[in-house]
Length: 255
Image: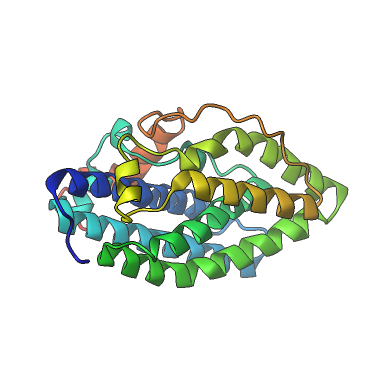
């Protein structure tokens, strides 16, 4: 299948693509803030490459969105207001220390691994093909951040305590990862997008096991209510202002 059945379905798919693209874009920006500041030179290079990969993945989803709606990626990235972004709150939080950044990347990468694998089964061929392409790089990201999870979780008393503090800070945001937008079930029924609730359950089982193996204590199973995608923390606006500064000064520039 290479086309969508009707306008309503097209708009639903487009909305989900925007969410996925914004997640990658904002996380890429946060990760890029480590360039020149990572704990070792090798990691400085590796994490800069991961940030660049995330930016490329964002562009893949934005370009697919353009094919459906005609919306220009440059305009979407550089000329929307913060309230118009649809990224997860988790990815917009300040980079914090290295433990926070590594743990956030691990949680996101683990989710993305299962999500992309499910997207490869989409009946909408462009989504399936994009997921397959992105998944090849994301598997590397997950191996990298999972190694850091074990290294710091099982390391010194200080590294373990920093990782635990990061987990305690990030966990309240995790349920938003698989919160489905209105009418999303229609996309699941038509095999266009995966069941987010099912993937979320699998994701939580996996990360709880791996966190425990890394010497960390996952929080209890009580789930906070997930905020909507148009609800953001106070940290997004300064990030967007910084990211858009050059484009707003030179409106004809391309990214």
